[in-house]
Image (cartoon, rainbow, N blue to C red):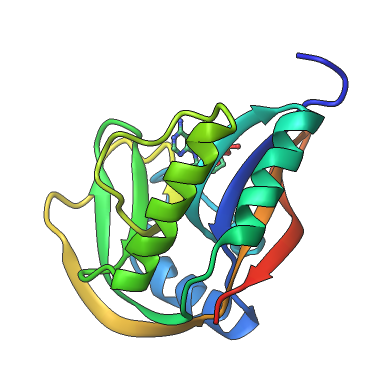
Length: 176
Ligand code: ATP
Ligand code: MG
């Protein structure tokens, strides 16, 4: 890793209202002692994980982001689930909007040309609300929907501090 390397990802970043609603919703699913809640300031939906990125690759990624021309969409977060292997509790969407899939698709294509590895698994839009959850619900639970109007996507830096990881929004691009 050179000195200029940053740990980066593209994400959907909630406003305060969506963040507060997700916080309230997730609090009801967290039992005391079960895992580490994510601080609401860190709530996000990852669109594409770039990982350790040097200056040249970051410039390439920003150039790709600038060429994306997709519509704004409404993301309806309406279920809570648990993934055993990464041990995370999440709030997600039963239905992934076509425009979000198109955004992910455009980024996969463009960023591959920059040398980033696209995600091979199906895209699952989710907000991780707790980590290191050893035991979680086996079944998906429907929850009161949080309706999130998504009008931009952002480049975010993951910064590791003594207090834990913190995400810093570097730059956003508008969706039409
Ligand atoms: P930490 O790794 O320090 O426990 P974190 O996982 O929240 O914290 P990052 O690893 O920097 O922080 O990840 C930033 C975002 O990218 C998170 O939403 C994470 O789930 C996602 N992410 C991390 N690694 C990958 C990966 N290999 N593929 C897809 N998404 C990833
Ligand atoms: Mg991680």
